Length: 261
Image 1 (cartoon, rainbow, N blue to C red):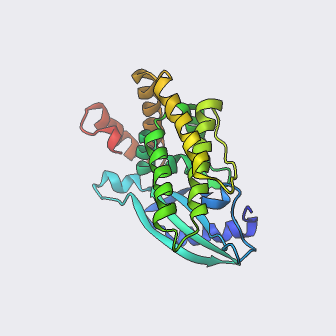
Image 2 (spheres, one colour; image 1 turned 90 degrees about the vertical axis):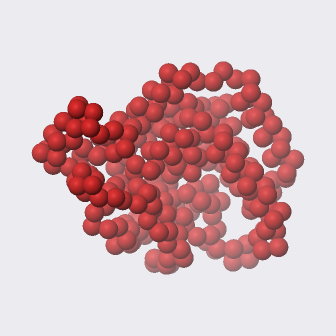
Image 3 (tube, helix red, strand yellow; image 1 turned 30 degrees about the vertical axis):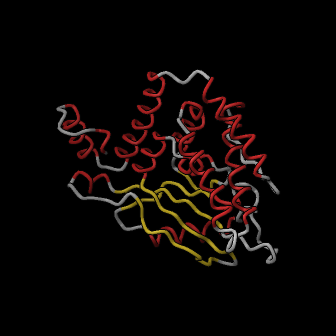
């Protein structure tokens, strides 16, 4: 169930209260069970689902130019009640998000491509990621998460319903399958998944990865360049014209590395 407009305003107000004055809000999306259309808000017997909110913020470029350090993440906030709903909040700085996208981190992909996008200034970045997603190396991150869910289904079965972990593993596999076989992102709900179904689909994807022609290094470099260029533009939009001239002068004189911005 998607949160309503009134709750989105509550979410934005809460987030802005958490962000330091040196940071600005760029993006709010929902991940977790509701992203997969699997969240539950009414049946207490199967457990009420929290809304998992992913926040992307930007640290002041002016402060960066002054040599100030910033954190890649702000502390997560758990079990926050806004209105009649429960929320968990995760916060990530845009520079760290870009680095994770370049590495093919699947959680970073979900943050941007989630169908539950409540607020964004990152439309250009979202379009770039969506159109080039098949060029990103998602398998190490995706398969790592899937194997972790499989282990979790056994290791924590005394305190957590193992079916939840198996469902989480399978829906991630279906996400990867749609990217590699249909060239699209898709968030499909699943239920009552078995370990045999998981192994069958995992073998299919691993076989695809073995026999399929990989993107060339040139193509991967182009995607990385566009991602970093997107970050550079966001940094420049966050500063005054005088600061912009200063940073471009340093760049031209090779006194700074634009990848570190």
